[in-house]
Length: 394
Ligand SMILES: [Zn+2]
Image (cartoon, rainbow, N blue to C red; front, side, top):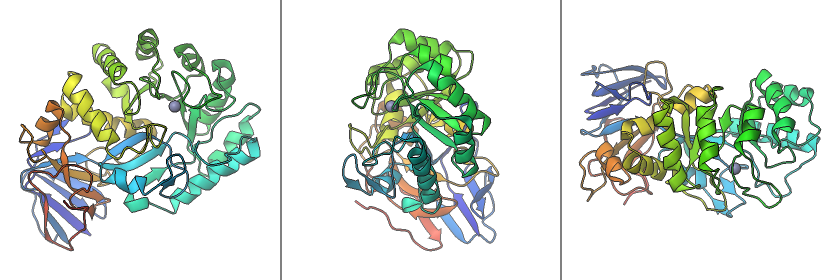
């Protein structure tokens, strides 16, 4: 099946090294981007979308979510939070641990079973079309290498936030992170103050000793690391990914971003929501964080979008997040909202406004029209050939 998007004003690549592309069209074949360029031929496209001069960006990747099963969160007793996040531009959601399961098992057999069951469950289910990568075990003392081998063989590719279970110190975590790494599992270490009673603060020392892939929410989830600790993580020669989250400290998010700019390591910065959580269910969390960083952080909006797309895809080995041939065609078509002082999506973000979403495609198929959650886009994409798609509407 062929899909063509024409009439694009700006294409944001998702690659922080080259964030804007010289293109007005994107061609998609069987769910993957085939070409990005100017005046691509309509040929025999099954679906033709006119972007009406607006902006196309990769679908956003939330690097830090807390799903459990399906599209329900026990933490905030809320249904359809994943669908609601789609209406905030999120097309891929990555679990940092299914910590909100009532009665979450802390014995090793139980925590392995949960991780495998959650992983297999979301492999069978894409709520509202969103790609959920989950099954992220919370590490407990007593785990051995064969536990990681068993989970990895069953498809588990993540280790949930270290520090939320009984493994809290760098020395306890280091061998487990290494076993996970040897079996292809991407690990995140919770940093800063505890989010759950019974867990404790985690400092840069513990993270650097354990050497996980990702330093989770260096701006706090919700209580931030000190600026001295953030500075040490940015300077770490291990190349550890530096995660900033919406449900954290807005000031130290800007501190972390500034340090990453100064050290020329923006390629290591990724963005998460850290919801559902005590903060709530925040449908526009990733979008709000992008606008925060792009308006106050001194980094161009197209580059900030790359933090929430291409960077996360690279660290997690995903085939989405970048607009380039061969990638999955997970795309958002966006514009300045009605009433903004700006007349483009990127101009709106630079001003601190959230863009309006007029269409989202997953694997090349339009899944929603106008977002029910963002303010209305001033100009909306239109399907000029092919079946129409529902939206939230305004
Ligand atoms: Zn956390």
